[in-house]
Length: 233
Image (cartoon, rainbow, N blue to C red; front, side):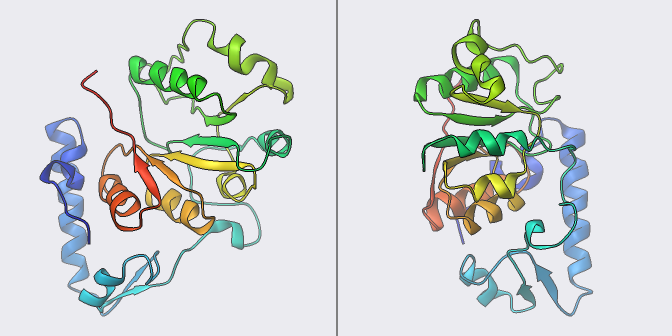
């Protein structure tokens, strides 16, 4: 099991006291409920967390559970519809060339973080697929760096640009696509399992809750990714 820093405990990663208290109460209620259970089914697998499952035999791994393996529409996220057009864009990219960037359903950036991420993607010189939710920036205003869309994305509206922006992507299909080279992720557990299942390396940028512990597994235990380290700005 990875070493845990107190600042990265799930309830300490929320920005205000009210949110921390609420999340701590939820975690505590879950721990107390566990005491009433004979067994706990967990969306993981023994190879991922061998020490944990050896230490806690009541926890039974039954994963990874992926919605793409069941018939019908995929479930498990909060944003519909998915933009399936990005799949044809991926088809036009070289194998292992695309940086896939997605931060789940709840991550929110401030204006500076959003713009720095955009510039960073441009500076890679690589094709990228970036999931930009309507509310991913505080204030719901997507203020891209000057000229960014013209330089990198504008021609991609019809599939030809180096960058492709979508409001939501069919993530399991994206991660299984041979064009995808790496996954810039918030390290939510579902996204983590999907990336692991498809053998895609991570750039780990957690936001809150369990995501910091998940980053430790990705970067320090499994060694399948690198942490994104922000400076004081």
